[in-house]
Length: 325
Ligand SMILES: [Zn+2]
Image (tube, rainbow, N blue to C red; front, side, top):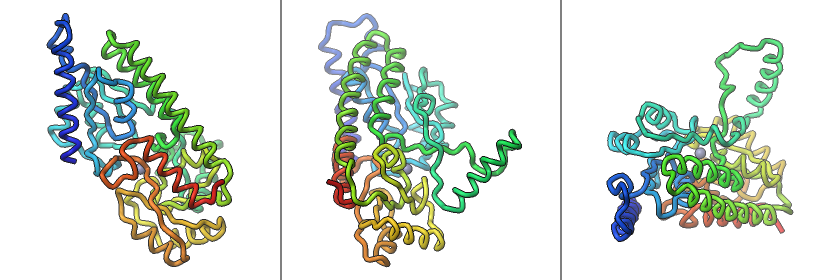
């Protein structure tokens, strides 16, 4: 965490140095450090840094190592929002952050949920799935009945599909181009390069997961729906979309039944939350456990230093656990 803060400070300082050695700009006070971009969490930080290159300074509101879902902003982070030229976030993922951003006077705001068509929240429980289907049918007959059920819920974890990372990069380039018109073309070009990298990663996943003996993954935090949908696997989430939910004993039994049915070798857990549930399910069935990283933040315990390297580590883990050739 300390390291990251220093890195950001160093990057900012470098930005300033680079600028001061350039010919005097017309409006040096405004352009001194380039646009200030505040981003809500890591995958957006990665895409924004790729697109902004050395033209922007990026501040991530989610401290590395903290769990982003329930993030509450501190007063100093709210001050960062107020000063930002652009804020990039994903409405619905971090409710307290959404509120602060919407209330802030940041000059430009990009909600990636308006750009990426988020999937409806996956049904984590058979009961809910059945109920959901039944309810959807009811709705056809009685429209407009907005009940207690969470119909509007979407799965936020789009970044685990690299093609959607490419899409986010394009949208970020467009917004940066509005915030800083002088560098519009650079942002568009950077987004194109980033898009090619994301496409290459997508190709690796397509090839790497194209032929797997085991078709399901069992994971504590159901963050991998975009990944399993794209690459033809099935996700069985133990706890749901939010990593801190505790599964019921009934859910654990269901998961164990599904794990047996699909012949899985491994129960996955993630870096930022406790492995206890995964370990106890695996232990009861005599299975292995392994980390599958939802890439909600990079820490020293991550299996890589950035989005693509952790994605590649995930790919390797999946290939091994699911017997892919
Ligand atoms: Zn998550």
